[in-house]
Image 1 (cartoon, rainbow, N blue to C red):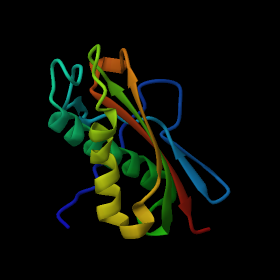
Image 2: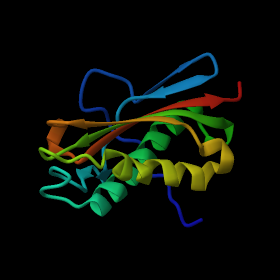
Image 3: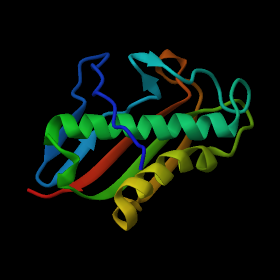
Length: 144
């Protein structure tokens, strides 16, 4: 598929990258960070386009998978993507958060097929840490 799961990030605060509870994995929010540096910064609808936001959400979702892999050891244990929460650093009046979050949804469906389809929330926010464009978190169902 030509998709590479990056190395898991180092947390920037007092939290874990991901936590397993039973057969569920909950990832911490991940941004569009590449090689330790935010790849997309600014507000969607002012500094960045919807297309930029789409790519940022895609990268953030891959970083979530890296966080899950750090707990599971392998993504082969993932049975289904259950839920995606997406936070979009939005300019005033910007209302296309779902189009931005399609980047995360599309890459997850590409990787996991029908089991990558999920419930989702897309929220516009005033600010995000380090001025990142999006933040994504996942809930994954996993094999024991």
